[in-house]
Length: 70
Image (cartoon, rainbow, N blue to C red; front, side):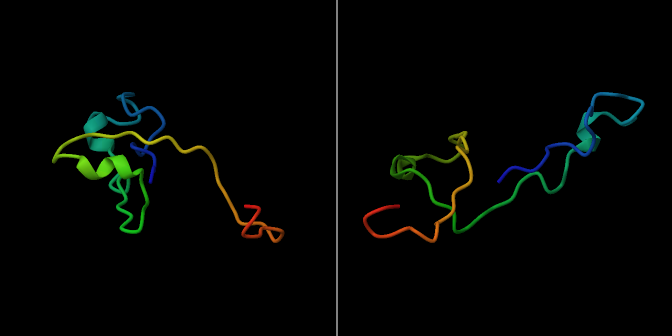
């Protein structure tokens, strides 16, 4: 899940962040979701392999959803 990586909009601005961008890292920028789902191809990943997933949008089950129509 994505949160802002930095606490300020421009972390390289020494006036806003006098100690530099590394001091401005958001401690909540990484969230681990133990119930997340991913493509089956990821199961062969090795330690330190990297992935970037694209969020397509937000989805919700509508009241007119059936087994035949999702």
